[in-house]
Length: 375
Ligand SMILES: *Cc1c(COP(=O)(O)O)cnc(C)c1O
Image (cartoon, rainbow, N blue to C red; front, side, top):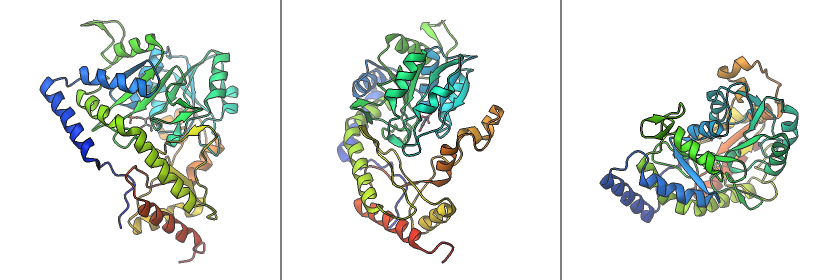
């Protein structure tokens, strides 16, 4: 049996038909760039996220960049985030001309440790970007509390957390703006590139609408230097149809995660994901920890059995060549660095079968039970 890391096949026939019909409508109306299908999706996605507004943009990186710009981040500012994220979180800070500042994580949830946040604030700090990594929201209440006291804006990187909740509130609705990616592998995936910002702040919505259209305030009247950051009409139609299934798909992901957790319980040397109290984790990724010395071999073993696995992410951003100029060395963020050496993402997608989960768990256990160094 081949068990891919992820499958993007549309299994549901009625969804398949609905998407095709949506695309046909876009073709018939020629609303290809921005337009009514994007507006309709924005309205649905804003209500899904319990926000007043959504802005459809080109991708998740645009979403983060525009949200920071709209909230006033610019040259001379520092923006605090975590080093264990996809590089786009940090690129967005750099694109604003601001300086990224990292803080270490909680070692169980892999999200920002609020205690570290307080210490990293300087007079130049303007914003904080908590990353809801793997589908689990960061511990937002203490983060929002610190931000309120220090006058910082909070931009949530919810690119892996569509539909996740924190104390019953939707990821993306907690800070000043919430940023989403609809890259095809995300929990809500487009047929190409797309992203969105959600907010309750009308001014943020208006600024992003302007930024994504080359800073236009009226046709060919350019108020600020913007960018071409529109969402495609076809993506709007596809996402609108897929959004209706998102909650059920997230529930399916949670079922697979629960099954993995029960099958991988008490496996020596393996740590299953920690779901913090009052969180609804949506398992964009199912990430375990394994002994550092055996991770590479385990991945090879799984490949040999036809099972996909990946590492999210192998190198924390402060150790990436692109950010060497920050002068941060190994040892700067020990929890994020240790996690990077031990984490392993196992197959996870809504249509993953229970039999496949059982096979993956059995193979992982079989490998870890082998004598170290033996064969
Ligand atoms: C996917 C992702 C992004 C970037 O989204 P794109 O649509 O690929 O630009 C940003 N942050 C995180 C945490 C992501 O997973």
